[in-house]
Length: 98
Picture 1 (cartoon, rainbow, N blue to C red):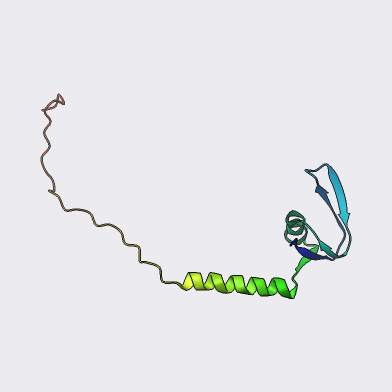
Picture 2: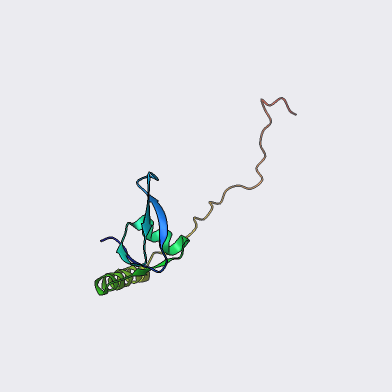
């Protein structure tokens, strides 16, 4: 379902890869995601309108996300370094150093 926005101020927007410019007048419109994003977030001339079905779906999705986040997750532990010989003398043989 396309986003439904309520436009408060008329605006122009390019569509069809910039090949066409359309004007969107004040009122309630079903528009593409891109147009809704620009009108709401960038131009700030519209608001998103949610129907009760959209609000219920969003509430269900939020509840599912919260339940998933609340699920117990295993604790991440850093692997321990193995113990080895410290400060072992290293031979310089074959390096040309004495």
